[in-house]
Image (cartoon, rainbow, N blue to C red; front, side, top):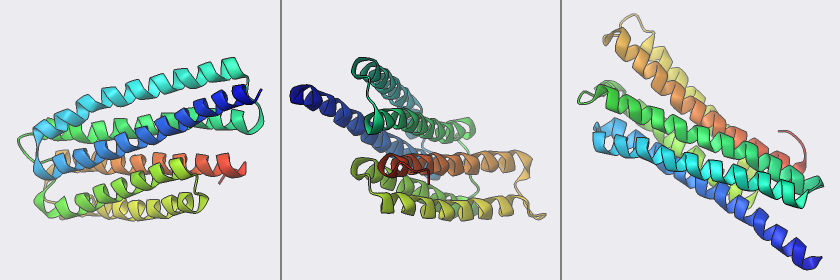
Length: 216
């Protein structure tokens, strides 16, 4: 019986490690997508778009593994909660990868022009840095199950929301000089980053639930 339990624990540990690996992948993906926005780097944008397939593959393989563990081990109580929570976290992380993909696709769509007017580059860069900070913290939360740090992720999301509102307020100014198409591009761009952070918060909240058994 102790040996069976040890094997099961190893499987749970590998699930947690894969979730952490996914968090690193989506953090790196958004960091590179942001850099491609800042530099109009089409090659880098294409790399981000291509790398999303790998993120999807890892996520699909993880989900299949979790379902297999549930079927074989028939876990109960906290073990079942950990596995069901992992399924939901993997979906959030996969969606974060999709959103980085969307940012990169906007770079490709507007190349060789910039998707972001020069006067808004600093703001978009700050939004991207905040997204990366949130994703990095989320990875630490996954690996350590640190509830206090998970709560910090939500506070960092407030910073993202403030930056997003600042971007939108700029776009609706009557003096906006860049036309409707650019305003739409930036509205979508802001939404991608804002949703990316929301999914990270969702992951952090799921960790809180995993540790405490209570929804944040």
